[in-house]
Length: 265
Figure 1 (cartoon, rainbow, N blue to C red):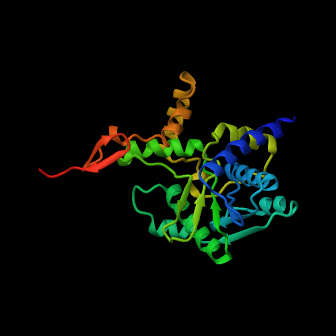
Figure 2 (figure 1 turned 90 degrees about the vertical axis):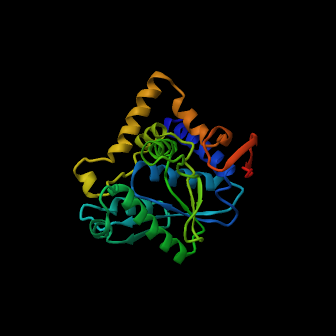
């Protein structure tokens, strides 16, 4: 079996497990993949297409790219690649750059704000076109980094959920790569030779990153080198929460998993 097939099969197996475990896709779903043109979204699209071919559950897969209005953003390589493979593809334009500059509050991450705006555009598009699920390319490292960022900088224990009902009460967001680590996606993307493009936003043009997330990424990489399995354990802990050993206000745990309100004397 060729390296590309081996890598894709491994990722598809993890994605299939997540889809089944969290009931991400059901019969008749119309799945819209948010295709940014980066390695994660390309991997997600290809894996979902593979799973669709072999799945007893019937569903469709289409792709959409949000054009942010940055002059450097060029989705033509995506169009060329997808049209040659007969994949339904849409481009939604939105002046995200102008919106960010006019409404971003001090201290807010440019990338985080942009991501929220993109999701808003996708929500509107998916609702209008009748898509039942929106698939995003967040992977295991994203979940772990977000967990640590929330603890370190906002004082919360939370991360990115595999399945989420949007605030509009209509759109359902799924993340089939939630059990796939970034290094697996990077290896697969390199062999697959996808037409990866840049979003063209100002931080990327200047080489800047989300500083705090970059710190988390570096810290996890160093820890993993010395103690293999740390990232897997952090991912596992997202599904093994023992509230008895946390400081939840106004709750007294009589037995593990049985929270009861404290009675007033």
